[in-house]
Image 1 (cartoon, helix red, strand yellow):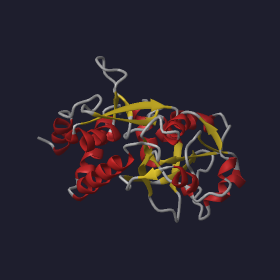
Image 2 (tube, rainbow, N blue to C red):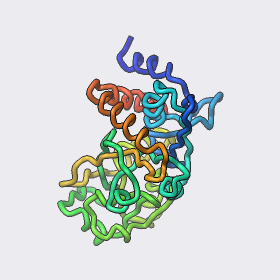
Image 3 (tube, rainbow, N blue to C red):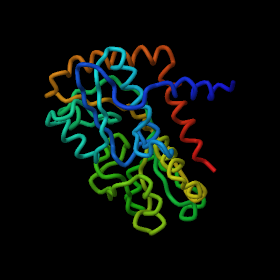
Image 4 (cartoon, one colour):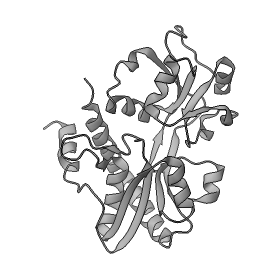
Length: 265
């Protein structure tokens, strides 16, 4: 059996839904989808079911400990606000900046993404590699997503980024000349294009990795007000470290990338 099919067979055995147990934990993710880390199941039987790398990882951390956990999808600003206020125990798939380090307790990183910028090929047929990505603002408006953190993209004046709600709409902003460029983590953007069936966009877009910027770590942000914060961090950090050492986090990510690739034509 091909290696990726073995992965599918293995991970399809994971229970999809909330974790079950006595202690009740609650986590939130971005509601407009952030594949392959969280996205909506797309089949006739479970159209609205939330699946992804984040959801399966939480199950692997807490299910064995008989700890119940619920994952809810919320607008990203609301997700962070409810974690800050202690209504939700933690937010998954969060990058760090100074403010977040002050308001939350971050876990160890459990994956890394590549900050990139995109533009229309026809606008720059010879490409536009820049040593200083802040120069993008000199060429025209730069787009991003509301609530997302771009502090790790090496760009000055992130307040000047024009924000919209949904990642899959960013190429449309270029086509309508409302933006000259947009910022995205390349792995998530590629998965977003695939899962929304926007395959033709790949041909019109050019991508550049942002130079001199290392892969960006992503964390679980835990609320300092959560009564279970120590338990969450201890179990999550320990399990992530163990899974990383065994190569199982890589295999879990491969599995979800494989599932998303099935949306390709």
